[in-house]
Image 1 (cartoon, rainbow, N blue to C red):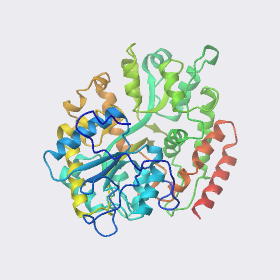
Image 2: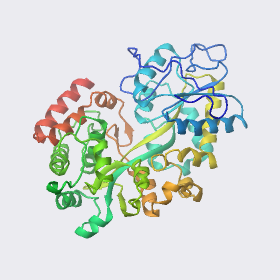
Image 3: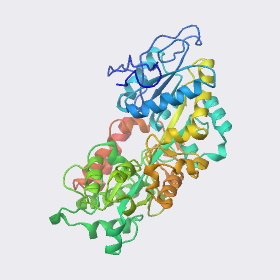
Image 4: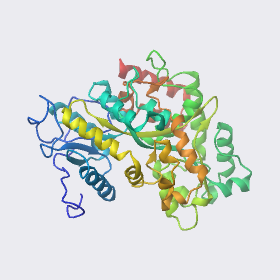
Length: 455
């Protein structure tokens, strides 16, 4: 809960953010919602604005931490002091987004705009609920060439329309202890061979040392860890015709390799907590994790950051990275006035010092999608980021162009992928091979379930 005494008198809308789930709407989203007030005369007929003051523009965000709320409130205040319109901020837990978006869609009370990840963007876009005109307008105003090309690609629909405005993101890769690799004469863990060699060499369970941590529980983390192994081997969930090909030879090979790495991981179902804890406790010298770990490593008083290197991709037949892009989504269901306010606010946030302040809410976790910001001294003038060398920060920024996700084929998104992730079918397959099941059997079973889901 946000303390209403902090900063200005808050107009933050907290009512209506609950756990009630309403059937229908958008399945498989990762987003949030509100059951706010019905639309009034300021909106176009039948169009909602997500609750709050009737004259305000409602903004949903998954940045629910109090410290981040304070920063966002300050940014809203700076916008309102210069521009037209007022903004109501609605914090939504990321896990509640699917039910909240479904609820708001059914009641026609979607917000004017929201900040969330790729999955809800895809689902809303497939329902023609996003304003591509607004997204294009903001990107053109800021400067299309300044955006990472990979970020714009992930933000585009299958027919090439820009669905939302890239805001920030994180990338996942191998974080490894440089001194341990140097002592063992190991190369950076960027290829299948170098990853396997490092896992074998560093594995010493009798002394509470593990060679690697792979996500092996039935969670999104397992799917995220597995994705670049599969894509680096050319394996996909869908082919270009939208058919399930999870049982391809390339996917079976990737599953088999991933399962073989699990023997060097701590026993049990390993999650992102396992990876974080074992690395910080020096029980493992090589983990897959998002760039959010930079803050935890920097907080270590033993100079761990200076001894940690980052490998931003996995390579076999090709290079592949995994990451998450968070975007500003402007809803086509909002009134013209609310959309214009949303556009102006998003442009305000992605400009100059405002963007730097926004990103510094979570250094390392919220990385710039604008090249000019990534290279600026203002962005790097941060206590956490300054502990990391130029190479690491550049590797993170550059990884946006290598980010790949199973829900895209040849740069075109496949909305049906949301139905597969909502049932954790890839994570189930990863868990099974990590437990030693035959990769071909697992791939055949998963592919059959996927075909049932999309058909």
